[in-house]
Each structure stands twice: as C-alpha cells, then as structure tokens.
Length: 507
Image (cartoon, rainbow, N blue to C red):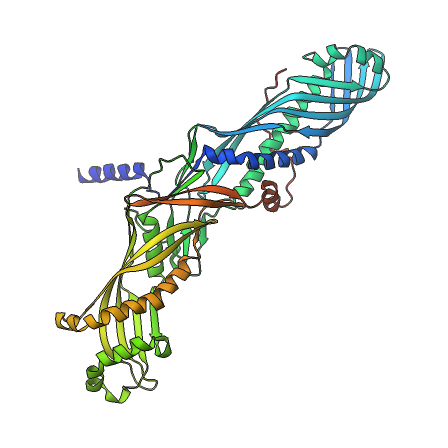
C-alpha cells in the first residue's frame, strides 16, 4: 500500500511542475509602441521582398499557351499594419492596403496567333494575414515554432506593350478583372510562391535569430551564472503575453546544482505598463546561496586595510588579552576576518525587501614571522535593506545596513564586554563592506530581453513574497539592424526547402 501512495504523491508533484522564480508579462501597450517596431519590420520586409527571384510561369489551357519570364518586383509599399495578441496563435501581424508592382515579359500563343511584349502590373488592396506561434524549445528558449500566412488582392491593373497593345488596352477591364485571367494568376503565384515564404522565413529563421540573443543560461561573473530557461510555452490572451522562467542562479563550479524552490509563486495582474517582471524570494535566495557555495562571501582586512580609529579601539579593548597571551606581538598588524556562516536569506514584504545575514568575525594579531594570535571570535547578525531597480536590461540592487548586533561564541559575559565594539564594527561594515557589496550589485543581472531593447521608466512594487517591476520599452537599435547583425551565416531571403502553408487569395 505504501508504494502506491508514494507513486501517487510523485505523480501529483510531477503534474504540478516547477515553480517559476521569475515571470515576464508583455502587454498590448508594448505592441502600441511596436508602431516603431512594425515600421522597422515593414522596411525590413520590403527589403527582403525586393531581393526575391520569382520563377518563370509556363502553362497551357486548351489551345491557349503562355510563358511568363523575367518577373521583377519594381515597387512594394506596406502602408498599414496591425500587431496584436491572439490566444492559440500567440502573435498576429496584419498588413492591409498594401500595393505591389511587377514587370515581366509575356509570350502568348492561341492556336497560331502569337503575342509577346512586356507587362507592367500592379495589385492594390493587398492584405497579408500572418500568425506566429511562440513556444518553448528543448533548450528552454522562446522560439517562433510555426508561421501561417494568408494573402489576398482586391484590385489589379496592367499596362501592356508589344504586338497587340491596343487590343489589350481596349479589353483591359475584362482581362484584368477575370478571376482566371493571366494577371490575377501571376499575382496569386507571386503570393503563393514568394511573399508568404518570405514571411515564413522571416519568422522561423530571422526572428528566431533575434530571439537567440535572449540569455537563457549564462555567466553573471566568474563565480555564478543565471538560468532563465522557460518552464512552459508562453501563454497569450487578447491583452498580454505571459512567460514563466526558472529564474535561478547557480555556482559556475557546480553548474548542475539546482536549489529547491519553496518560495511564493510571483503573480502578475497589472496591464498598465508595457512590460512587467516579477521576482520571487527564491530568485534572490538562489543568488546568495550560489555566491555562498562559491566561497566568495568572505572578507579579510589586515594592517593598513583596517581603519585607524577601529584599530585603536580594538587594541584598547583587547589590550589585556594581548598582554596575557603574547606581549611580544603587541605591535603586530591587526587582522579582521569576516565570513558568512550560512546563505543569506531574502524577505520581501509590502513594506520593503530585507536580507538577513549571519557571519563570524575573528579578530587576531598577525605578526610576520610568528603564528597568528587570536584575540576574539564573535558572531554578527545583520539585516540589510535592498532597493531594486532596472537600468537598461540590468536588475540592480542598492543595499543599506539597517540592523546590526554582535555576540560572543564563548559566553554571555564576553558578549557584554563586546557591547562597546557594536558601534565601531557597524561603522566598519558601512565604510568597508557595504561599498563592496553595492559595487557588485550595481553591475546588475541581465533580464531576458532581445538585443536592441531596454527598460525605461520602471516602477517597483513589493508584494508578500515577491516584487514586480513595471516598465516601458525603448528600442536602442533598429529592428533591421539587429536582424542583419544576427542573420545566420550564408542565409538567403528565401528557403525553398521549407514551404509555407498554402495561401487563400481572393479577388
């Protein structure tokens, strides 16, 4: 019976899944800013389409045969576009009222009647509906997993040259508007074989190369790394896109280390800003535990590194011990060794964020030619306040020492004797330790954003067990610039081996 219960509990745990340490919400307001992005995308798409090569079109129907060659896109204008979220399809791009102009050579044979010449054709009221589906790939990265495309034309025009130019001009309204006319067939071939494949390629290849710039598992410094793996596929509603990340640090020397996440799961409810990022207490706890395991949460001050005022106070305080233990080293340099005893812990409340630290402090004399003489060993409890902010792509923290107390590891009586050291040691932390911590924390940790996009105008809100940062987005680089920079080597505008979904043009 017991094994069945164990299996049942294991199934429940597996079903529940891993609790995210970080969540990101992109709202529809970000897509409003996307007018700039969409303009850049239009320019990029126009450039891609200008370089396409349209294959020759040959065929026959009864006694009628045709041969269309030397097809070139002479002009493309993508006037209006709309970008929005949609459940299931995730991200929709609608291009409407676009126009496209072509020039090609025609060769027509009807029984024994031959005609040849150039045609300048244009389509107006072009609509392109593109759906991009976002998903988590096996490496935990967000990817465009599928692209579907539907294109249509509402109006066409053509100017003929060659043998029967006057005849074509006289019959132009019939020839152009006929549902099975040569011009419509050619434009539909253009959509089926060229425009939708370009969008298909732009989504699956070029946009994915842009998403490859989002950090997933990378080093923060020489000691620790950060894991931003997606835990599941992104979820879209009509108003936002939500993503759940592992949001965990790890020591680089133990890259396979994972810490259990027992923190409160962060929640995102707001939709007023372009982007919201939520961090649980686990996000910060894993960072501090990683640094603790990496062995860097320690500080040693010796000789001139010890502030003079503190040196004098400590020598006066422990003068009796120095004389009794080893009076010959009374002038030896003073050494302070501060080491964190356990991973610090973060507590997030609506009133603010605090970090609790317990460390040991060993005070000793360190003569150059003799063993060290330990004067005292004490425990220090400190509570730091932390103020979080976003700068560019970096999450930064500014810490301040709020509470501090010391006590002896030997006896309560010695703890009383250490009370006079409370103030000078607190000053030591403020002038020697806190600047080191803040120098490191101000470098920040990168938030998973693509290249060329930064956060601006951030607002931090503390909740019970997590904090959220609402911000707007700022494009520091043009979309085309970033895509071109990260375009895969040897990539072409078209990938013939990957056909797009069939279009459904209508007249």
